Image (cartoon, rainbow, N blue to C red; front, top):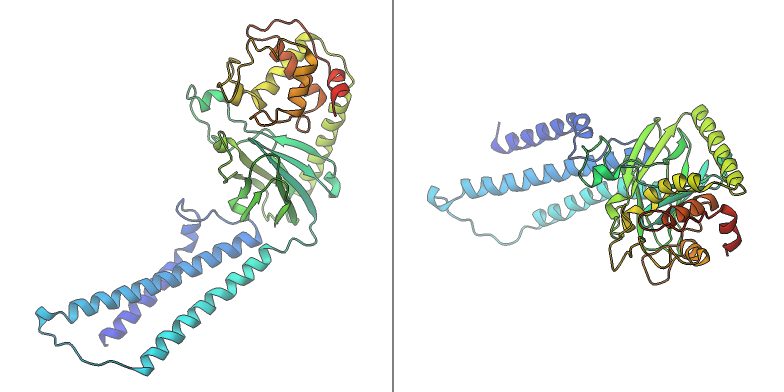
Amino acid sequence: MTKRSKMRGAAAVLGALSVLAIPAWAESKYNLQTPNSPIAAQIYDLHTLVMIICTVIFIGVFGMMFYSVVKHRKSAGHQAAHFHENTTVEIIWTIVPLLILVGMAYPAAKTVLAMKDTTEPDLTIKATGYQWKWGYEYLNGEGAGIKFMSVLATPRDQIEGRAPKGPHYLQEVDNPVVVPAGKKVRILTTANDVIHSWTVPAFAVKQDAIPGFIRDAWFRADQPGVYRGQCVELCGKDHGFMPIVVEVKDPAGYTKWVAEQKEKIAAAAADSGRTFTLEELKAMGEKVYTTNCVACHQATGKGLPPTFPPLDGSKVVNGPKAEQINVVLNGRQGTAMQAFGKQLSDADIASVITFTRNSWSNKTGEAIQPSDIKALRK
């Protein structure tokens, strides 16, 4: 067997070992996540194919280079050959790379076209990025009309290092997106403030959410389970606290979830017409504050001046209720204070305002009712 034949045999063995190692790579933290959608599977296979091709080329080129350097070194008495042109060699090193590129480009183009085919979805969900949470709205199917906010659920004690980190630290939310298995789901992305990015690696979905624009992507989850992602666009102070959780259920489980969500919507609508006691509002408001406000204004109400002003002792919080309601509903233009009018219900806004007006050194003794919020909505 010639040395050239031995080199070819070694390259073939390495290629075969690479293929056999693919299942192990799927579980490796150094590789892509295990795919759970047709597009993710295509991307994973394409990634593996290209890596194998690149590895074989790398080994072949550098193997030949080092072989030539060692075998034809001057100290071994090798005399350099003198030749200039070889048409056959030039044709070969032009055609072979061209064929390799075409072989890589065809499956890549096929995958990209499939990624962009968002036609005929079974379910369409609008995902809106906020600093720093996601809002979801189901636009069709049996879940049409369902709307909710999805906020980081990792306790502040873990974030601030006062408690051990949980198994899903910074990758857990209070309200996950729920979809049925085996159905084509179209995601429409946009943003309320800055650019965000809706990304779930197991579905091979990564779509920027841009204010004033609607972008789309799709996936079809094959297996029920919980799949995690996050915003991968640098979107501000709490960029790292903006996870995405998708729970894939079987059809019966999805139908049950839809029924539960519609019951919650009906209950929230009923709460908007209720009159609550001060203590009820404070208890409700503390939960809303912890979920939506504590990152900026802090648990102590002291804020992070000058960007996030303190609520403890604030003239706005202790002043006329209409002014504070207007700020919470519509935000403050040119500041970090965003509008919560479209994010929270009348009862939630009423309760969190009541909480801030009756916490820390603030002692107004005033209970803000959902009817007060409804009256000032624009």
